[in-house]
Length: 178
Image 1 (cartoon, rainbow, N blue to C red):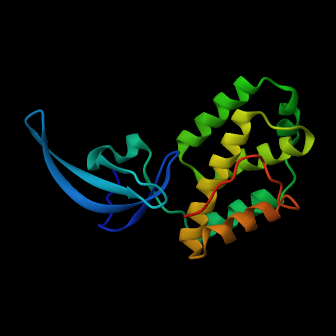
Image 2: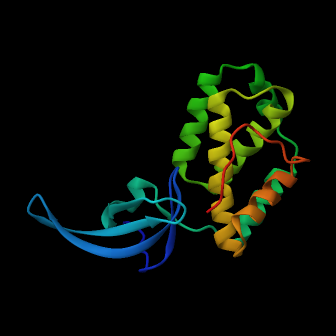
């Protein structure tokens, strides 16, 4: 059974970030009446319709709690585990597949692990173009949710995330908060 959300509530869509439930729409699809949420993304000009009865399948979830955000900060404050440091020499394709799987989970903790691992790898070697993109995506997803939960600006959330890894390292791509 899918979780139901309220009109104008903010939710998190896997890989795309925070969206607001803009409208509840009723459409007839294949002769059957379907109720859909119209999700308007906060930081991009994108709106999608998602059937209410398939929210779980699509991985849509509520914003994290303050406790979950604090758990993310605790995770980022810990040294990277040995397995992530050993991944530096492993094949990027295998790491990327694992990271993409974690992003699809739409779990803030898993996204924070990707971010921490890539920041750790970045200290030891230059990231590939794909790794840089993934790092930027993970940072953007974390910053968006942290900003909305803690009611701070995304720039401040990004600064806080980067503070766990020393001086803010420019990683070739810049995420610009809107």
